[in-house]
Length: 187
Image (cartoon, rainbow, N blue to C red; front, side, top):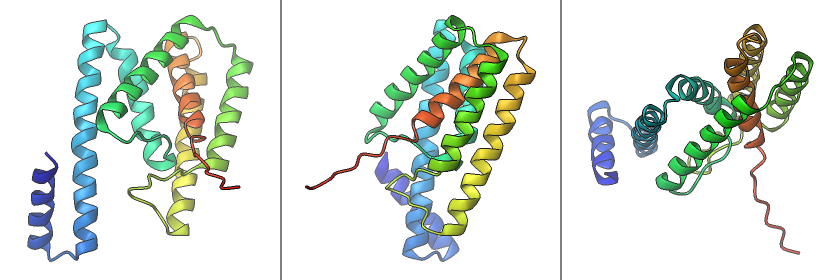
């Protein structure tokens, strides 16, 4: 699979006269797109089997529209990524059905999420770092803005408890996963 991606990236780069750096970016984008698509198809199949299709779609929508801007947790293999994503989605759905969150509590949780995203995002994938300060600031602002929109949407949907909770819990998990940095202190 990786060999095919490399060959496609090489072809695209040759046709467009890209540099080696640009070719690497094309390869990375193709690899992310392919693996994310496969992961999404797997998660949708599981949601069809378990009967939680709408809930999974809501969680995935929130995740896939915030994570590109805020970054967060990354596994080192695609299998681990699929399992971690599936478990997180399952946890979010379980908590959304099991825990009743009042309006004031949702406001507090949204405020905490926004604070965490503003102070931690974007957390970059070590395989494709963003090193331009302008892009980092842009992603942080977009991540906060998108999260605020989802926070407002969850408040608007307050009477639809499960949908509202799905959004809140997804935002909470997304912000929690910003704090996964492992720091190696060599004392």
